[in-house]
Amino acid sequence: MNDNKLVFSLVIGVIVLFGLFMALSGDDSERVDVMVTEEPEPVQLPAPVPEPPSPETTVPPPAPEVVEEPEALPPETEPEVVEEVAEVEEAPVPAPEPLPNLNNSDDFVLAELMETDGGSAILMHLVSEQLIRKFVVMVENMSRGEFPDRNLPLERPMEPMQVTELGSEFYLMDEASYRRFDSLVNAFSNVSTETAVRLYDDFTPLFRQAYAELGIPDSNFHTVMLTAIDNVLNARSAPQPQQLVRPSLAYEYADPEIESYSDVEKLLMRLGPRNTENLQQRLEFFKRRLELEAR
Image (cartoon, rainbow, N blue to C red; front, side):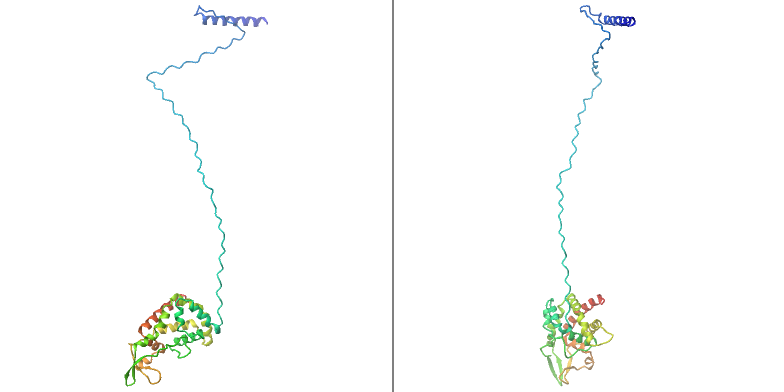
């Protein structure tokens, strides 16, 4: 060791010894041996003791420990069940059956009426042959105010007209004669307007064929049908019963004015007031529906 270092070490040693002596001089009963080294070991001082709180100062209690609740898990949900809907193929709408030939249409017409509500009652009053042709001829005659004596689609009443003889070749129609037509009028009146229009639509192609056979130019059956209905709705009436005469096999009205009425008007008078009213009411509904369809 060189001289400078030796001198420096001695100085440091003297300072340390002096400091230790001053620190321990307060107690003579115990001798303290101090070992000096070149680098003094650091001395750890005791931690300061906190002063007790003054009476005026209140120490707040420790805050309660906040325990965080675990985050709620979403409730378990059942897996969504997706129902597989089987595709159902719609049944094809059957095509309407083709209409028969006019010459062979009777069975078709009778079958259609048989399947219709109230149609069986009408069948009791119809002939069984050439129904479409005879119906078209009757309608065409009625459109002109006439009524054919033959080839009608309807059966004539079996009961003869009942009259009361007044003497001097005058007769009076008995009101019982009106009842001959009750069954026929009731059968037609019991068919709903919807059903009547449907049947008319079904038979219209056949009606047109039969009307074309008549060879009437510049006309069509539907217009003729509406005109025939108007002649029934607008028919004149007269007080009942009326006196009759019989110059031949057929009875005639004794009043020349009434005898000049059209065949349709005189036919309605023979039906009687109640039957005429029922028939006109049903035809009125039927005509309104035809007009609404704007044929």
